[in-house]
Image 1 (cartoon, rainbow, N blue to C red):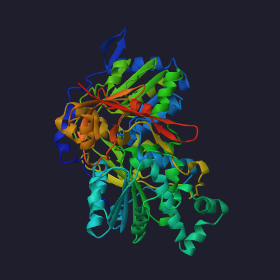
Image 2 (image 1 turned 90 degrees about the vertical axis):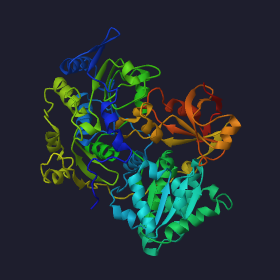
Image 3 (image 1 turned 135 degrees about the horizontal axis):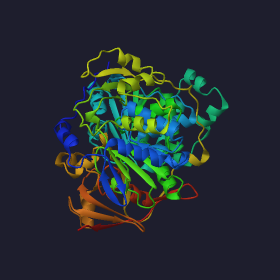
Image 4 (image 1 turned 180 degrees about the vertical axis):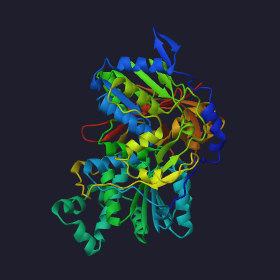
Length: 582
């Protein structure tokens, strides 16, 4: 069994607990904005005000955004609040660019059997491992420990990435490619695999014309001799030399979520008998996705929510997670529930202080499917309750049939019909300080083949100007990313404002380490901090993708303006200029 983590943080993180809880930017009490002025109020008055305002809107005019950092109890009540009380489908998670969500959405849309659960031994006993699309040691350090254990026992490691990674020094082969080359590499591997299937597997898989077409009939032109490095074939030979095989795929490999990549990953994993494990996502993203799937709800993207606000369709928005301040039109009525003060609060009519993840108990689901019920590590102040309490109180004020919940235990009882696995947690004792655990059941539909579309064979990429942009994810674990602005340790660990560049490229542009740099395109700009690294290719800038959680910095609008799609399916990166900041 996988050992639990009794709410222990990493070596550096454990010394930051005091800052997470006692940060000066904690939102102290609820406030209401009236006539342009902020007024601190008590919780009953704030909730009465919110309920009265929401009662003036109808259905799709209201929306709710929530964080995947929240435990299952909160996600359950907030999702039900949006669906049953607000009667709105305007529901979104604050996370973006996660490999897990891309794969889950792909599986859901294609009715595919994607079993994401795994045990530590699935990795530690693997003989061949692919790590693609991210710095595994940084994004999911626990997973890297298990990979390292497998390597010590003789496993072979192949890495596939656009950037040099620390894990490359442990790899038998480190394959470097640009994102638009990934589909061709996966297609080549799929072609090699189909040639060497044993007769039983081939007969079972090619049982009908649809699967035969999806697997064998389509060979894109890019596969002609000379278009791919010989290391591509060598990498696949290494992966297939010994089993079991594990594919660890990160956001860099899945961020372009077209079937050109996702369908090939899925086919490769199924046909090769490999375990497909996404990495690089937020603390309870696995549980959040499973909750919505079992409730039968679909989420929108944050971008779609913002578009609805801009069009004037979405007029009232409840935010239980960090979002950037609106640059254009804002909702008529905006409620922000957050542990900390942020820029979005400056636009809100109501601010509600809530507890951090350390100050309340709850159930979280790890990337492996391990459900763990954590106790509160630190007692919360009286004015800062969990997010679910806000949902419970608003629901009670807006609907006479809304169920009453006094604590997390009562919510878990209500969740049993959706998550029967919780029964295993309920029988493991009553100790408030004990971490209880069980595994998430995999309730997946039967396997179904995906048919490759002719127009999804490759990704055509065009660049204007000499500099290429590559994007790195920047996770906001436990809604605390903004602390990098005030904490030296957190700033060193994961400051999102870094623009990473090769030292020789920086010298050519007249940039130095830790200087401010301004990136500009025809219609937008971004101010960052120079970080030098020889892991970045020459002619390339690496920008952290973040749209929330950090004061005064959101790279999402700038990055969105740097790339545009064309009618022929190609992607164009606009020219950018680089200037030294003051």
